[in-house]
Image (cartoon, rainbow, N blue to C red):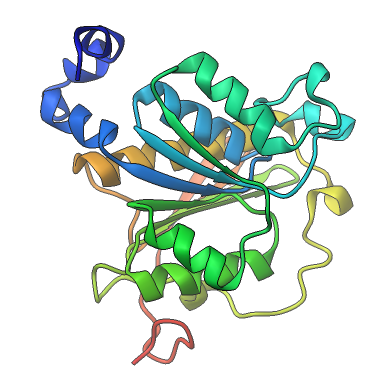
Length: 247
């Protein structure tokens, strides 16, 4: 790191558990974030600001007026623009040293596997089960830690699935594949700050995985009821019969 970076990240470096070594691990890291919506925007912004050196951001969508209520990486001037291009400008405004690889396709198959393989941590900020199962399978295959988040109405959840640990469950240990047509924000609504809370927790868990500090949410599921601002925690066992990670 150069002198400007040492100054930029000084408030993190002064934390004893982080220090220069932990910050350097962030600078040297690559994170894949799939989805540049309500979860992906705050997650990407905090990771860029915190000093992650390379962000691979993926989304095939364009910015619409209804997005601006909660997707804080975009603004009024970005309407009609490809989301990854809009967010790329925002991230470089926060930290001009961050390297951005912007993927404008909906990742699937070999392209998804390639993007996952290139990352140290994968952040799932998508809004549908089909994408989540595909990302999970790719992470299990490549043995990459997955930081999963979801938010709808006034409820959110976050979990870490770390397939580097044989005892860790994967996303499909928690959910089975099925139709999720009625679980979208467009069908049910979502409160704006909720996605910011969940996306920020995803960023925090990603930083912990990269830097090696603290205890991650691996094997645990955090559930937030924003109506009462109460968090609940559930322990997640690994399913030996799981079709994605089972024996």
